[in-house]
Image (cartoon, rainbow, N blue to C red):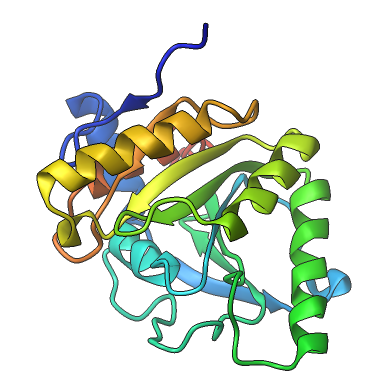
Length: 225
Protein backbone atom coordinates (compact mmCIF):
# COMPACT_ATOMS: atom_id res chain seq x y z
CA UNK A 1 0.00 0.00 0.00
CA UNK A 2 1.41 3.38 -1.02
CA UNK A 3 1.97 6.01 1.65
CA UNK A 4 -0.19 9.11 1.48
CA UNK A 5 1.27 12.18 -0.16
CA UNK A 6 2.81 14.67 2.23
CA UNK A 7 1.68 18.27 2.36
CA UNK A 8 3.89 21.10 3.50
CA UNK A 9 2.00 23.64 5.63
CA UNK A 10 1.10 26.52 3.30
CA UNK A 11 3.35 29.09 5.01
CA UNK A 12 6.26 27.01 6.26
CA UNK A 13 9.46 25.75 4.65
CA UNK A 14 10.89 22.40 5.81
CA UNK A 15 13.47 24.15 8.00
CA UNK A 16 14.97 27.58 8.55
CA UNK A 17 18.23 26.77 6.76
CA UNK A 18 16.47 25.52 3.63
CA UNK A 19 14.13 28.52 3.68
CA UNK A 20 17.05 30.94 3.89
CA UNK A 21 18.88 29.16 1.05
CA UNK A 22 15.74 29.37 -1.08
CA UNK A 23 15.28 33.04 -0.22
CA UNK A 24 18.87 33.85 -1.23
CA UNK A 25 18.53 31.94 -4.49
CA UNK A 26 15.32 33.64 -5.56
CA UNK A 27 16.71 37.04 -4.56
CA UNK A 28 19.30 36.67 -7.32
CA UNK A 29 18.88 38.57 -10.59
CA UNK A 30 16.37 36.83 -12.84
CA UNK A 31 16.16 37.72 -16.50
CA UNK A 32 14.30 36.59 -19.58
CA UNK A 33 16.66 34.50 -21.71
CA UNK A 34 14.62 33.18 -24.62
CA UNK A 35 11.16 32.50 -25.97
CA UNK A 36 11.18 29.36 -28.09
CA UNK A 37 8.57 28.56 -30.73
CA UNK A 38 10.58 25.80 -32.41
CA UNK A 39 13.07 23.11 -31.44
CA UNK A 40 16.06 24.97 -32.86
CA UNK A 41 15.15 28.05 -30.79
CA UNK A 42 15.51 26.19 -27.47
CA UNK A 43 18.52 27.55 -25.57
CA UNK A 44 21.44 25.29 -24.69
CA UNK A 45 20.64 23.19 -21.63
CA UNK A 46 23.44 24.51 -19.43
CA UNK A 47 21.59 24.92 -16.12
CA UNK A 48 19.19 22.76 -14.12
CA UNK A 49 15.66 23.56 -15.31
CA UNK A 50 12.34 23.73 -13.47
CA UNK A 51 9.34 23.80 -15.78
CA UNK A 52 5.93 25.21 -14.86
CA UNK A 53 2.99 23.43 -16.50
CA UNK A 54 -0.75 23.80 -16.08
CA UNK A 55 -4.08 24.69 -17.59
CA UNK A 56 -4.49 28.13 -19.03
CA UNK A 57 -5.18 30.69 -16.29
CA UNK A 58 -4.02 28.34 -13.51
CA UNK A 59 -1.57 31.00 -12.32
CA UNK A 60 1.80 29.96 -13.78
CA UNK A 61 3.05 33.47 -14.48
CA UNK A 62 1.76 34.75 -11.14
CA UNK A 63 3.59 31.97 -9.30
CA UNK A 64 6.87 32.66 -11.14
CA UNK A 65 6.55 36.35 -10.28
CA UNK A 66 5.82 35.55 -6.63
CA UNK A 67 8.79 33.19 -6.33
CA UNK A 68 11.17 35.76 -7.77
CA UNK A 69 9.64 38.69 -5.90
CA UNK A 70 8.80 40.51 -9.10
CA UNK A 71 5.54 41.68 -10.61
CA UNK A 72 6.24 41.74 -14.35
CA UNK A 73 8.94 39.11 -14.99
CA UNK A 74 6.42 36.65 -16.41
CA UNK A 75 3.46 38.09 -18.28
CA UNK A 76 0.16 37.74 -16.42
CA UNK A 77 -3.02 37.82 -18.49
CA UNK A 78 -6.70 37.27 -17.88
CA UNK A 79 -7.00 35.92 -21.41
CA UNK A 80 -6.44 32.14 -21.53
CA UNK A 81 -3.73 30.85 -23.82
CA UNK A 82 -1.64 34.03 -24.11
CA UNK A 83 1.63 32.17 -23.42
CA UNK A 84 2.26 30.67 -26.85
CA UNK A 85 5.95 29.84 -26.57
CA UNK A 86 8.30 28.23 -24.07
CA UNK A 87 9.81 31.06 -22.03
CA UNK A 88 13.17 30.65 -20.26
CA UNK A 89 14.26 32.78 -17.30
CA UNK A 90 17.84 32.62 -15.95
CA UNK A 91 17.84 32.82 -12.14
CA UNK A 92 21.25 33.92 -10.90
CA UNK A 93 23.04 31.58 -13.36
CA UNK A 94 22.02 28.74 -11.05
CA UNK A 95 18.55 27.71 -12.18
CA UNK A 96 16.43 28.07 -15.29
CA UNK A 97 12.73 28.72 -14.78
CA UNK A 98 10.70 27.53 -17.77
CA UNK A 99 7.18 28.81 -18.36
CA UNK A 100 5.36 26.34 -20.62
CA UNK A 101 2.30 27.27 -22.70
CA UNK A 102 -0.95 26.66 -20.85
CA UNK A 103 -3.07 23.79 -22.06
CA UNK A 104 -6.81 23.22 -22.28
CA UNK A 105 -7.90 26.48 -23.86
CA UNK A 106 -6.38 29.12 -26.09
CA UNK A 107 -7.64 31.91 -28.30
CA UNK A 108 -5.45 30.89 -31.23
CA UNK A 109 -5.66 28.99 -34.48
CA UNK A 110 -5.73 25.20 -34.14
CA UNK A 111 -2.52 24.83 -36.16
CA UNK A 112 -0.73 27.22 -33.79
CA UNK A 113 -2.01 25.35 -30.73
CA UNK A 114 -0.87 22.06 -32.29
CA UNK A 115 2.58 23.53 -33.01
CA UNK A 116 3.32 24.73 -29.49
CA UNK A 117 1.72 21.64 -27.93
CA UNK A 118 4.04 19.45 -30.00
CA UNK A 119 7.05 21.53 -29.03
CA UNK A 120 6.13 21.25 -25.36
CA UNK A 121 5.80 17.48 -25.56
CA UNK A 122 9.19 17.15 -27.24
CA UNK A 123 10.76 19.44 -24.65
CA UNK A 124 9.34 17.39 -21.77
CA UNK A 125 10.45 14.10 -23.31
CA UNK A 126 13.96 15.02 -24.33
CA UNK A 127 15.36 17.87 -22.23
CA UNK A 128 18.49 16.57 -20.47
CA UNK A 129 18.70 19.47 -18.01
CA UNK A 130 15.07 19.23 -16.86
CA UNK A 131 15.13 18.44 -13.15
CA UNK A 132 11.46 18.76 -12.27
CA UNK A 133 8.13 19.82 -13.69
CA UNK A 134 5.73 21.67 -11.42
CA UNK A 135 2.19 20.76 -12.48
CA UNK A 136 -0.06 23.55 -11.25
CA UNK A 137 -3.61 22.73 -10.22
CA UNK A 138 -6.17 25.40 -9.35
CA UNK A 139 -7.25 24.75 -5.76
CA UNK A 140 -10.76 25.98 -6.59
CA UNK A 141 -11.32 23.20 -9.13
CA UNK A 142 -8.86 20.37 -8.53
CA UNK A 143 -7.88 17.95 -11.29
CA UNK A 144 -9.65 18.19 -14.64
CA UNK A 145 -9.70 15.65 -17.43
CA UNK A 146 -7.34 17.86 -19.44
CA UNK A 147 -4.66 17.46 -16.75
CA UNK A 148 -4.44 13.68 -16.95
CA UNK A 149 -2.77 13.35 -20.39
CA UNK A 150 0.01 15.62 -19.13
CA UNK A 151 0.57 13.45 -16.05
CA UNK A 152 0.59 10.34 -18.23
CA UNK A 153 3.13 11.91 -20.60
CA UNK A 154 5.41 12.73 -17.67
CA UNK A 155 5.00 9.22 -16.27
CA UNK A 156 5.89 7.69 -19.65
CA UNK A 157 8.88 10.00 -20.03
CA UNK A 158 10.09 9.26 -16.47
CA UNK A 159 10.22 13.01 -15.76
CA UNK A 160 10.01 13.87 -12.06
CA UNK A 161 7.10 16.19 -11.37
CA UNK A 162 5.37 17.74 -8.40
CA UNK A 163 1.82 18.94 -7.90
CA UNK A 164 1.42 22.56 -6.80
CA UNK A 165 -2.01 23.83 -5.78
CA UNK A 166 -2.47 27.50 -6.66
CA UNK A 167 -4.94 30.15 -5.46
CA UNK A 168 -5.47 28.53 -2.05
CA UNK A 169 -6.49 31.93 -0.66
CA UNK A 170 -9.69 31.65 -2.69
CA UNK A 171 -10.81 28.41 -1.02
CA UNK A 172 -12.18 27.95 2.50
CA UNK A 173 -10.31 25.66 4.95
CA UNK A 174 -12.78 22.76 4.79
CA UNK A 175 -13.02 22.81 1.00
CA UNK A 176 -9.23 23.12 0.72
CA UNK A 177 -8.74 20.06 2.93
CA UNK A 178 -11.08 18.04 0.70
CA UNK A 179 -9.30 19.29 -2.42
CA UNK A 180 -5.88 18.37 -1.03
CA UNK A 181 -7.10 14.87 -0.19
CA UNK A 182 -8.54 14.37 -3.68
CA UNK A 183 -5.44 15.71 -5.44
CA UNK A 184 -3.11 13.61 -3.27
CA UNK A 185 -5.16 10.51 -4.06
CA UNK A 186 -4.86 11.17 -7.78
CA UNK A 187 -1.13 11.90 -7.51
CA UNK A 188 -0.49 8.55 -5.85
CA UNK A 189 -1.67 6.83 -9.03
CA UNK A 190 1.27 8.27 -10.99
CA UNK A 191 4.71 6.76 -10.62
CA UNK A 192 6.74 9.85 -11.54
CA UNK A 193 4.84 12.18 -9.20
CA UNK A 194 6.82 13.58 -6.27
CA UNK A 195 5.13 12.53 -3.01
CA UNK A 196 4.87 16.05 -1.54
CA UNK A 197 2.19 18.51 -2.58
CA UNK A 198 2.79 22.24 -2.29
CA UNK A 199 0.00 24.67 -1.44
CA UNK A 200 0.50 28.22 -2.67
CA UNK A 201 -1.06 31.62 -3.13
CA UNK A 202 0.72 34.17 -5.29
CA UNK A 203 -1.62 36.82 -3.89
CA UNK A 204 -0.85 36.52 -0.16
CA UNK A 205 2.45 34.63 -0.33
CA UNK A 206 1.28 31.41 1.30
CA UNK A 207 3.60 28.50 0.50
CA UNK A 208 6.09 30.59 -1.46
CA UNK A 209 8.93 30.16 1.07
CA UNK A 210 8.37 26.40 1.17
CA UNK A 211 8.44 26.10 -2.60
CA UNK A 212 11.56 28.26 -2.87
CA UNK A 213 13.27 25.96 -0.37
CA UNK A 214 12.33 22.84 -2.34
CA UNK A 215 13.48 24.28 -5.66
CA UNK A 216 16.67 25.63 -4.14
CA UNK A 217 17.81 22.07 -3.50
CA UNK A 218 17.74 21.47 -7.29
CA UNK A 219 19.80 24.50 -8.30
CA UNK A 220 23.42 24.49 -9.40
CA UNK A 221 25.89 25.35 -6.62
CA UNK A 222 26.69 29.01 -6.14
CA UNK A 223 29.90 30.08 -7.84
CA UNK A 224 32.73 30.93 -5.44
CA UNK A 225 33.52 34.62 -5.29
